[in-house]
Amino acid sequence: MIRARLAEARLALMLLTRLPAGRLHDPVPGIGASAWAFPLAGLAVGGGAALALALAATVLPLPLAVLIALMVQIALTGALHEDGLADCADGIWGGQSPARRLEILRDSRIGSYGALALILSVGLRWQALLLLAETDLPLALAALVALAMLSRLAPVLLLTLLPPARADGLGHAAKAVTGRMLGAAALLALAPAAALLPLLPLLAVIVAQLALTLGLATFARRRLGGQTGDVLGAGQQLAEIAGLLVLVAGR
Image (cartoon, rainbow, N blue to C red; front, side):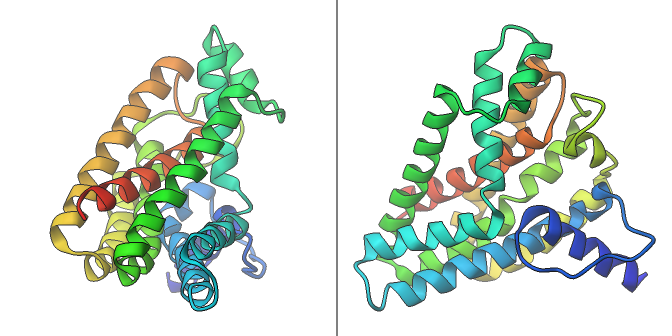
C-alpha cells in the first residue's frame, strides 16, 4: 500500500514538474491514480519559488525578485500549465465547433488569444505577488506555497466533474478520478494552507477558486464536450490568479 502511494506521488511529480523523480517500476500506476498527489507537486513548485523570492529579495529590488520567483515557478513546471492556458484560450475562443476547437487545442502554434492569455497570466501574477510582497513579504512567501498547492486542486476537480473530451491524450488517460481522490487531494492541500494563511483570507480564496473552477467546467463542457489536458492546465492557472487577487483585495 505504501509503495503504491509513493509510486503515485512520484508519478504526480513526473507529470506536473520537471524535477527528477527517479524511475517507476511495474506495476506503474495509472495517471488518474496520482491525482490525489497533485498538491504535492504544487508544494515542490511553490516551495522552490518561495525560496527564490526570499533569496532574490536580499540582493535585488522587489519587482525583480518577484519576477525571478515566477521564472523559477515556470521553469519547475516546464511551463506546462501556461501552455495549457494558451492552447485553451486559442481553442475555446477560436473554433466554431467542438471538433474544430479540439483540433486547435492540439496545434503547437500559438494564436492571438493564447498570447494575450499568457501576457495577462504572467502580468497579473507578477503584479499581485509584488503588491503582497511590498506590504507583507512573509505573506507573499506563504502565498506562493499555499496557492501552488490549492490551485492544483482545480485539475483534480475538473477530472472528477468532466468526461474526457477526446479518446486519447492526458485528459483521457487521467479520467479515472473519484470523489475519494478529490477528498484526499483537498486534505493534502488545505492542511498546509491553513497553517500558512489567515483563516478568513483562506476561506475567501477557496470560494473564489471553487467558483472559477466550476465556471470553467461548465464552459469546457459546453464548448469542448469535456476536459482535456489543456483545460486542466488552464484551471490551475486561473485558480492561482484568483487566489492571488483575493489575497491582494484583502490587504
